[in-house]
Image (cartoon, rainbow, N blue to C red; front, side, top):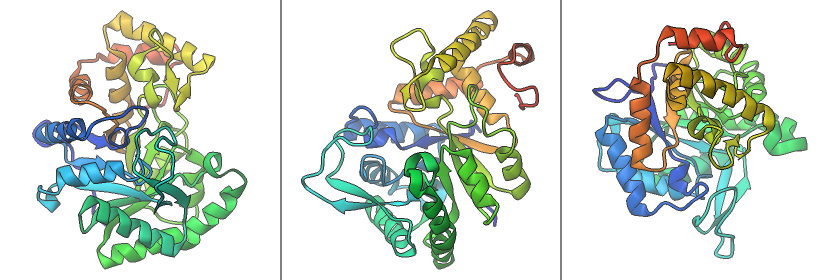
Length: 334
């Protein structure tokens, strides 16, 4: 198939808008604030957008659909995810899974063929659109499912992915892949199935290189288009170590991650490079990576990311990180 994530029009920056904050991840964002962010991203040339039923129990999908529906449908690439169904429930808690002030639905896992079709159709109704350009199977990993993980993996291979291929044949879906922060489950799937795309969250960053040895080369060899999420590792590579309680992988950062980040910060300061610029530019340097999906919450964060991607960084900076063992010797750099 022919598929690509479009870079920002005019600027050419390989940056898309991730929709988790639009679902009120960690803090509430008003409808107006969400709309201003999507409109600002669009004006800057952004044409790649990602969301999921999980993000605010449908809130992110609703907001993105409202903002994008008036644009020409061929002008942007929009992705969502399957694996969780939303069931109407007026009594459900309004804060769950790190999201606050969510819509009145409860989540239930469903990787069945019927559940996969329903998930896609439900997402399209929330979005108010007739097609999804990309659909990811969301979080089919051991950390999420524990002892049930082998059964989930088998169902993904035998039901979820074939159902998505059928939906692709019907024209409701454009490309099919996985959306996960787990390297092992992607390698397991690739051993038995083909994927068009991969959303890899947090496992290839300036701090966490676990996707580098096997997964990214495999994607490059197999023609799997990679969108990276979580390139700030949920906060620590955006905020640094010196303010508040730095977050790594959606939890307070453990000491080894704090120490490693502090070492990177020291090199950044010596070369006059913002930590955010180093994080964004490093992630995009690997040839397997098509685009970074940025989970911006406000217009200022989106504008900052664009500035950080343009920030001049000398080759000597990357050499120093290698010399100090802070990035792998064989990791591609800009």
